[in-house]
Length: 114
Length: 113
Image (cartoon, rainbow over all chains, first blue to last red; front, side):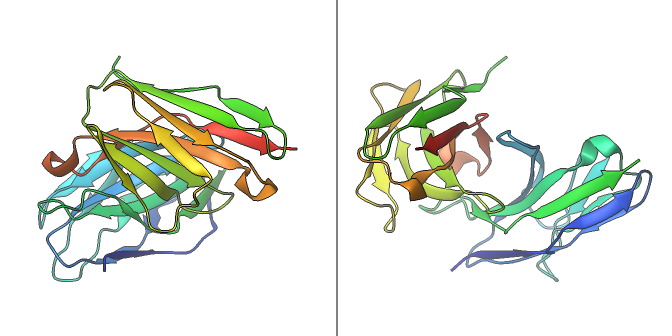
């Protein structure tokens, strides 16, 4: 079945540091890939997505590239801010068939200190 | 703005006392999902509706039920809440096979006393 493995946290960085959160996946089909962010006490927000190989999703300074050859979708940001402190979930959806559910990674807690 | 709304944001119920959580959407999406999320964990899918078709996850306890009276509204009923049912409950919507992403509401934090 489908699965997502992401870097275990917590990750603690200083403001303006470079961020990478690793995410790899296994899927039977050709999935779409997502990063969701969850701020304390809130629901999940879609941060970015990519639907095919070599697509780059980007939003709010975050980027991730769909790498089919390495089955990866690593999240990066060049300069983090305190306001980026949240839990980040990598997820996939194996659309095209009857499965339109999200398979989530376990989440990575990011804390950014001033 | 189109959105997913959950009410209430915080709900306290007593052990064994039925409780209903509600979700509404203005996105006009075909699919509505209910998730349970416990502390420091990923959301766990309980069930979803594709239009009026109900799809239960195999490991969802019978204690959890759902209703979708129309496209816009979906309810989660917990018939006899136990202490282990205390969690954040998230509603989400999506277009189903047309696109994989889901749009989440802010969640309802359920406390069982």
